[in-house]
Image (cartoon, rainbow, N blue to C red; front, side):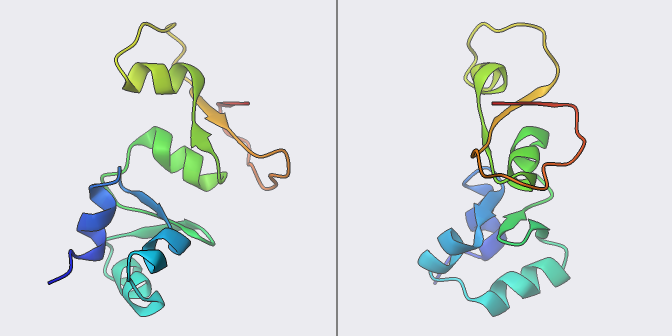
Length: 105
C-alpha cells in the first residue's frame, strides 16, 4: 500500500513540486483531491504545500526558489545572525516574486 500523498509530502518538509509527486506515482487526480480536501494547498502552478509546511519552505515554493543563507543555517542549527527575514535563492528567470519581506539571492 502506498503512502498517502499528504504524508509523503510531510516526510519531505511539507512541500513538493507536482513533477516530483508524479514521479513518486501520484496522479493529477490525487493532487487535486488533496487540495480540495484541505490536506494540501497549491501555492503556485506546480508547487503544493501541506498545512504543516514551515513558513520558509512555503515562501520558497511561492517563488519557485530554495531556502538558503541565514535561513538554511538556522534550520541546520548553525550560528547565524538575528535576521528574521526568510532568505531564498531564486533562478535569475523568476517572475511574480511578490512584495514579501524576503531576502532574494
